[in-house]
Length: 369
Image (cartoon, rainbow, N blue to C red; front, side, top):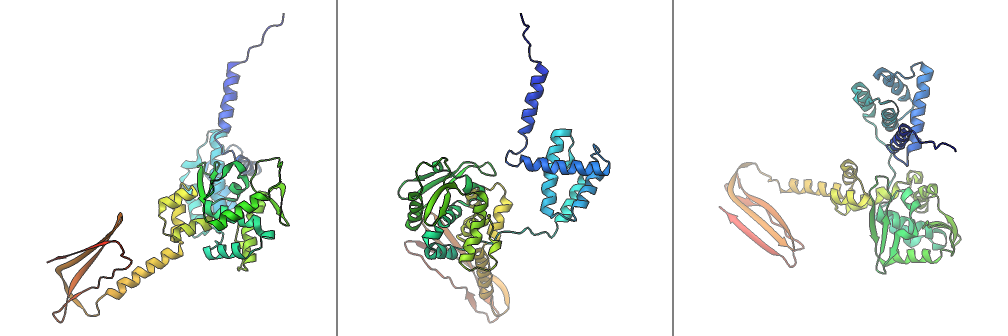
């Protein structure tokens, strides 16, 4: 009778620990982590410093790589190597302050290249003037990409189960994102819905997968899904159609940047922009507000308003006679504070109170002396 062989409990624990360790790395970019770590290990072998993870070793490594890598690549490789060393060797290089200071110095003055954006006028021009027989797929992609601030991988992974047509609008879900924050958005307006439905009607039957976007050739959809690299080329193709300068600068990140910029131009606040794009970092969202052309114009207009209301003669002092005007409409209240000024000629000048778009509102003016 054969004896039963029991599993070693320590082997089971070690196997479980190894599986848990693998889960510490991002699943989507685990290969990149391995590549960065292996490059560093090979460099250490070539320099004869294998297993010596001192700060000077890392300073020498990144000083050499700084000659060929951009600041962003230095930081990303540092982050990946740091994670791999924690997992494989229990080494924490986040406490190497000279190394971090060196990487920060390399990043000074660095400006990452950003995709150019499409304006609302340009998007409307493309949707209205491009022929559906050739550009219908691109039209639907730009609509979904702009309304959802989508990355190219999100467009690529979109399935028919993620899109719901409820008649008056489309409800689209993005369940798996780079930041692991699922989000959803809607698409309205008849012109956009008609283009979507025209494309869906051309989908062939018996497609052997659930991917939503299918290749589009000569007015017909094939059964093959659109690849991620093809999505990255669509913004440049749209720019070439519109005869925009430097079309190659419209990359796969164009739809996401365009969407956030359009939202910022519409006056959206930081919270709305972060929620729309699924950004966790306020710094990223703030960048779109700072780059907003409309926001810059509003700042310029405020500066002009202040300049035009300054008195042309010198002011001796401000009197205690103040005028406070407040307007109330709906749930919002806008208050303006105007002060009467004592001029050199002894007369009192009061700034004008300009009111516009005040339909169905109450205006209260209190004069305090």
